[in-house]
Amino acid sequence: MKRELEFKGWNTKTKEMYSSAELVKDELTLLTDGRFINVSGAAHTLSRIYEHIIPLQYLGASDSKGNRLFEGDIIEADLTVAGNGLELVIGVIEYTEYEYVIVTNLDDWPVASLALMTSCTILGNMYQNPELMEKHQL
Image (cartoon, rainbow, N blue to C red; front, side, top):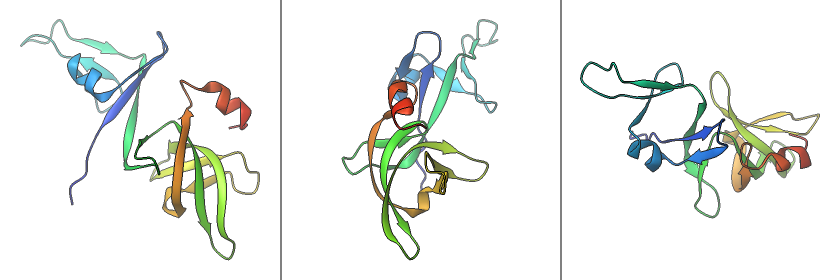
């Protein structure tokens, strides 16, 4: 089974989102501890670690408009609920210890597995659209 790995990065200093193409162009590599490094030179003495860029991983899925889903995306999703049919929720995609989930503002359903999602639309992301986080109490 082929699994496509892709990351984009949120720069906490400049408040900019870097696409995967921009990360590649700037020769940034993701370390196993979640930091990016720009490897320069054979001895790596000029290498620089970027602790202020947050990696956001592609989930391997897209929304109903064909936009790729990444960690931190705020989505409106249809979820299959046993016995209740479909339920519309708004939440942010986060990675837990074992899987990606939708963190919602629902008291009775604060976390939902992405496996329950039948379709979704990306509304924004938690870094570029903090007003959506506030509006939907996420």
